[in-house]
Length: 205
Length: 205
Image (cartoon, rainbow over all chains, first blue to last red; front, side, top):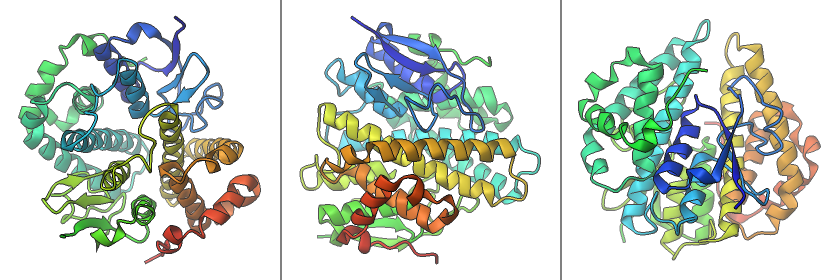
């Protein structure tokens, strides 16, 4: 069987979503990773023919079909085994998982934008304040809902929440998120011991 | 029958996605819109209990269940009539639609970030250059694919491409996109005459 090619980086939390899901789904050996360096202010010319937005993860199937973004790739990987494991196939449980995934992904997007912004020379104070308010609001909401989230099968929402936790440890140590969202932190400390998480460490390089 | 409540603004292209889809699906009369003012640097406190990320669109169902983001809301509205109209239910056509939707949404995200960035006092030159390169690459890709896109039933990808076109007319008149992507522009000029588009004008207020 041929392999799929994944435009990959060890630093991207959205790439990590795909890799953790691939481990959970047992399809990681069907993927070859290709290191692709991108940033908000850096374009990878070799990536643009596959993904004109220049974003990773981007998956190229054996027949040349290209898939992105991370949620689309994960649905595809899930479909290889029949589907319905990363997001329930139908019903209220499906919409609950999708809404939680949107919360987790939106939270991660917010952290990434916040990090980019606060690294600049003179970031607008109102913008930094809005990031802090939204991050605090999201952290409280996740903490309040994490027991219900933990009671569902491992899916795309749990994976993304766990990665967001690791991302905060990595990039927002100053946020003190483990003290501010103790139930979320306790759940995440268990989730990150899963083989899928241990096999996909975030490294700065 | 009770109504669903949509946190709404006449300026948000992602809110417009939901409204255009609601018109196409024939469910717009089941939605009450509530004007909610948000921005990247502005938090709407009344929105946070429904959506802790402070983003619109956010839909509140009659039983209090909350849904976001726009793609999740549109899938829910589609499901009210049995589903499968906005995104094919399965098979290669589903993944093609999802990948095109990711292209359209990513393009719109990029334009919104670019607009926010270039409005600042001293935006980093490398960042502005990366935005311009990615937007050009995406415009070319959309132009190259638009005939194939136009040959599919109206779904979430077409709606988002059409809204991105209107957004460029509204916020990026200087981009000259209609000259640079003439096939996309010609398709978009037809699509925006649909009743769903005419019923949801973008206004600056």
